[in-house]
Amino acid sequence: MQDHRNILLAILLSVLLLFGWDAAMQYLYPQPEEVARTAEKVDTPAEQVAAEHSRTGGLVDPAERAREKVDVAQALASPARVRIDSPKVGGSINLRGAVIDDIVLKDYADSTDEDSGPVRLFSPRGTPAQQFAQFGWVGSNVAVPDADTVWQADGGVLRQGSPVTLRHDNGQGQQFAIRLSIDENYMITAEQSVANTGSAPVVMQPFGLINRTSRTASEDLWVAHSGPIGVFGDAANYDIDYSALDEDGRAIPDGRPSWLGFTDIYWLSALVPQQGTSPDATFRALGGETYRSDMIYEPVTVPAGSSLTTTSRLYAGAKDSAVLDSYEDAGLPKFGLAIDWGWFRWFEKPFLWLLKNIFAVVGNFGVAIILLTLIVRGVMFPIAQKQFASMAAMKAIQPKMKALQEKYKDDRQKQQQEIMALYKREKVNPVAGCLPMILQIPIFFALYKVLILAIEMRHREFLWIKDLSAPDPATILNLFGVLPFDPPGFLAIGVLALLLGFTMWLTFKLNPNMGDPVQQQIFNIMPWILMFVMAPFAAGLLLYWVTSNVLTLAQQKYLYSKHPQLRAQAEKDQAEKAAARA
Image (tube, rainbow, N blue to C red):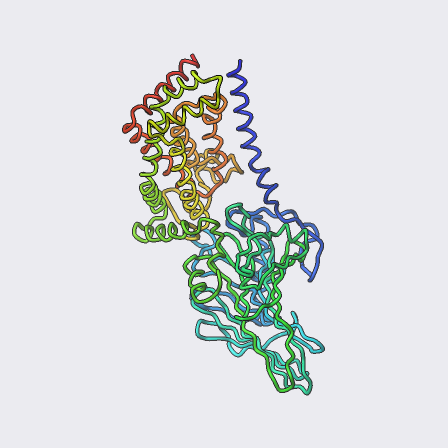
């Protein structure tokens, strides 16, 4: 009866874990809700359902995706545009308002379809996926350019090494210019200048802003931030999310801004102020699931006959670690932390470097993940040996420990003293078995996080998998890819998820029997619960876990052969468990 109650309790706990996972994630990381419009007008439907978010971002609703294509094509049909054509960035600049609202990333396809176009990062205002940047001025008693101002351009195409200057004369003695240039990667430089040819001084404040909708945002995971981001003072800020902005209206981080903007798991749009300045930096909720990050410089009086020039930058591109680090090396503080590496970045970045170099040699990212896991486990093997040696030593003195426990069962203090003396005589450290495990935790967590954050895994193929950054497409409910549909949520149990559950069950089966029957039942069921929990994760992560489990099995087999007393104990535990069931 007691065993039945324990089994029922184990099953209940497992079911709570399975069905409570999604609820817990929704509670800890709620999706943004629509709030009242503030700061500027936003064109959104009168009734708008809450957006769904994928792990990598982008519009999820098929109707919105279809409307996005139509609206973007219509917006880009205007002749009042300057084309962008650099090595990694394509798109255009809207001369009405001098808005950078059309950016595609040439190196990254939008999907794995053969006819897929490039990833679209920026879309014009009013489109379902709107995201754009703008540089301008706030003036005192002076007519400054606004959203309806049509600028004149001195060139038709913005290319690397071929800047374009936008000009506007307000007819009141002030001439405005924005000189735009772009480098070989994703950085646009904007030199904002105003020449005061009038008879009186004017007060000007240059600004830069990024406006975006959260409907295209990637999921904000506990291991990977999605939302407002920046470096303020001397630290990266990952604490602000869209729901917090909805609640508070705006956020003003403490410290001088080095850069600020919005991040998804693979993409970044960020403003970089002029070096040596300290503009006001703010994140705002504008309503309708639309948000803005802006920086505004201190007001400057421009005397008659003088001019003012301010140089800002805009990064709009991929979160490629090598590219981000190159800007940091060139003087942009902590730009590499646009990737939310966390505490273990000193382990993670070498792992990423090694993964990229293995991929360069073998040419397949799935094989590179397997080899990286094999290398890491090989390096950690001596630690595992020490752990098993400690377990074997502890197992060898178990009869003596039980004798002492029985002899001094009525005197706990004396019992502890005698057990400690036994450890000293036998030269056994009871903590030695735990320390290797503790040492391995940050190593394997770092490897796990690299596979979540690495854009290099996106759209990489392995066997039947077309994209290792997406869930395994071959699931039970679609007959492992035969039927053309994707099962929902945790029902999408794929080949890798099945292998994960099975290999984890085997590793638990090799371990010695737990003394507590409830714990033992939980350990028996846990692999299958984790199979459901992990199924929606990226296929590359599951490949790593399956490989790690297989290596654990091989390691356990080998180490049991080196420590037969542990093997004997495991076999004894299995026999006792079978006898108890009989």
